[in-house]
Length: 503
Ligand code: ARG
Image 1: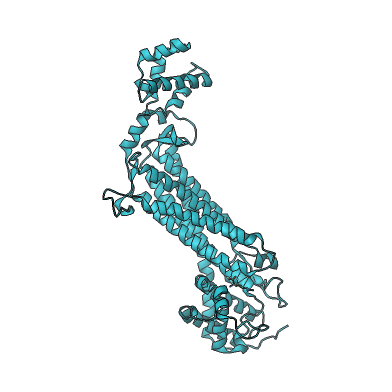
Image 2: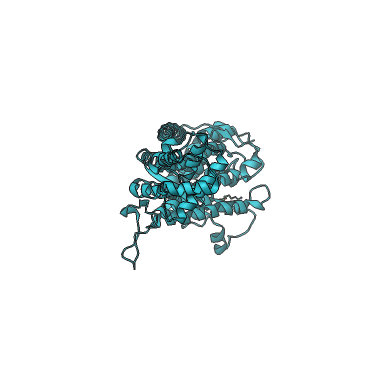
């Protein structure tokens, strides 16, 4: 179709090598409506007669219905060539040959990709919202579920399971915000930029943009056709999401071990072993962990594709499409899968409490109380409690509360501490695992009222961000509905008007 200078046809093997038809199925719909919008604009500007427009739109609508299944077998480089050939075949070169007027595959493919990515952003945002909703539900029923928090994977402080779950809603909200900000940068139309340097036709770029639901123009024609920073940004957003999901998975995998036994995956979310009958394996979470590596790989590939490219379109950019499509699909399925795991996992509350009780993770609270009650400065309190922990461990005890009065007094005598024994014992009792969280006063800590506030606040944030996503979707749907109404209204009438003529 495009071979004006090169003679003969391209070598079949080379055609297969350069062809993007396989990936282009995903942008097929966008390419058709992009063409329809462009044709309508050309007609409105007087460069296509009504009759020409109607025939072009009819051919495009036919392509929409019939071309996709046969496209794979066609001998074209990409969806753009396949559609143009179909149209030319239907209505002849005289009319069909107008399809690419004032446009190039370079602005076209970026418009298609942006329409696809804005849909992907909305889909991923909604799935993030669903995961957040599940985390909030589980947080709500685990506000009193005491558990250990770890730093360096060593016992750190005592907290609640809800607090852990809510820590991840924060990241997921930031993911949604990142996507929302990116959406504004994605939703700018490159159409009408041509190959790199614009057109001699005084086309109305704003009109095609608004027909396709773009909020703005990507104005500079070089930038519009050859930059892909927004695509790299999208892949970065997905990578960040997947890394977060991978970390959640890692926690759950660890906590499902017999050594931890904090949670148990539902049978419906577990795999087993062909050899070991006792096995209940967290394979879905392991697969997620590993799929996250592929998403990061796709981001790295996109950065590397762009790294050495001169400005202006180069065919290298074609390879970005499959990276985007597979990253969206994997992120979307990972979000849904993890939501199912979160919703169905069994939480072993008693076991969590038991481990927290038999630990020294309240040591920091004991040291803080010694300071806040005026007995010691914090560093001295830290040293005293450290010595008490060391003493308890040396005596084979598992908590500070297991130390006897005599043992503590001996330590006081040896190290010269002047604290009333009873006061220290009271502090240790107050800092018991079941009670200690109620003593935490700072904002954002795991105490009950903070959990209630966070859940409430998160619910409000979720409603707002879901509404914003729904509004974005509605705006796209409206643009597509309006466009299809315009297309239908032209097709249903058969009046013709004379073209103004080409410049
Ligand atoms: N199939 C190409 C892509 O996906 C379309 C643009 C080709 N442009 C060109 N000048 N070769 O990027």
